[in-house]
Each structure stands twice: as structure tokens, then as C-alpha cells.
Length: 168
Ligand code: HEM
Image (tube, rainbow, N blue to C red; front, side, top):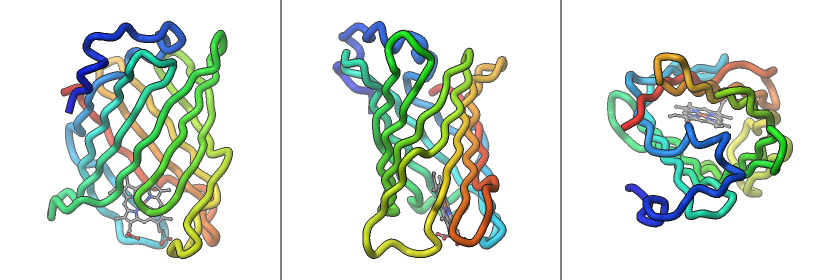
């Protein structure tokens, strides 16, 4: 759902370098999920990035199983930019009970992020995630690509997700 406020309020100038991210993105074909310890899977996902004039982007990511269409992973949070620099922070809550702060750099229309802090509920399922690396890239064909790699208690850093979206 579009945020009514963001249609009327001007984008905070701090966020101009990230203007290309704003809006709703739907995957153009199912994304691919994998990890050495799980069965490979396919998923669909919608991303919403909006703002209300603050120097903050609000986001929601909703993923579904590609075949059964059942809701799976969900994330929501905020994006902040350090004024005058290309430093970007994602503040994220996940439906699995994980919360994280990722930071990184904006280079052109590519955002490369690394988890700085991870926390989880006391009764979270194992294995625990130890590290997350995420890249968003607006490609020259206008599609947005996201890749996510993670390390867990028992696996080194490896790709978990890859998906591309078109603006809807
Ligand atoms: C499994 C983390 C995003 C779908 C897992 C596992 C972890 C994990 C730790 C268990 C791996 C193991 O058993 O060794 C994360 C993190 C994410 C993320 C940190 C985001 C940063 C997603 C997304 C989907 C997804 C967007 C899309 C549907 C799955 C599925 C499994 C799985 C289907 C296997 C079954 C299960 O354990 O539920 N993920 N995940 N994950 N993830 Fe993700």
C-alpha cells in the first residue's frame, strides 16, 4: 500500500542519493534460496520503501513460498544515511525473532551492507545467524537485485538468497 504522506511530502535532502530505492518492487521471477543445510527453495517477494519527510526511509519486505504462496519471511525497518557521506544503515526486525543493524556504503546505485549487531529472542530456533552480508543493486536494465549471504553457528558465510525485482 502506498504511503499517503510520501505522495505529498518532499524527500528529505539527506536521502536524495537513495531516491532510486523508493517505491514498491515486485520480484519478476521467483528468487532462489539455498544454504548447505537446507533444501533449495524458490520464493516471491515484495519490497516497499517509503518516507514521510524525515531523513529516514521506512521499509517492509514480505516473502512467500513460490509454489504454495504461503507467507514465509518478513522484515521491516528503517534506512538512515549519515549526512554528507555515503554511509548507510539498515535497522531491521525479522519475523523469525532476529533484529539487526547493518551498515555499509552506497556506491552509485549499489548498496553493500554488513551486519554490525545481531540479537534474537531467548527462544529463537538454532542455528543462530552470526553474520549477514546483503547487496542491493539497481541494474542498468532498471531491475533491482538483492543478494543475501549469511554465516551461522555451523556454516561459514555463504549465499542464502538471490532475487530480482521490477518496479510496480
Ligand atoms: C532457512 C536465516 C531470509 C526462507 C534459514 C535458516 C536461517 C535463515 C538461519 C536456517 C539454516 C539452517 O538450518 O542451517 C535467514 C536470514 C534472512 C533470511 C538471516 C534475512 C536476512 C529468508 C527469506 C526467505 C527465507 C527472504 C524467503 C522465503 C528460508 C527457508 C529456509 C530458511 C525456506 C529453510 C526452512 C526453514 O528453516 O524455515 N534462513 N533467512 N529466508 N530460510 Fe532464511
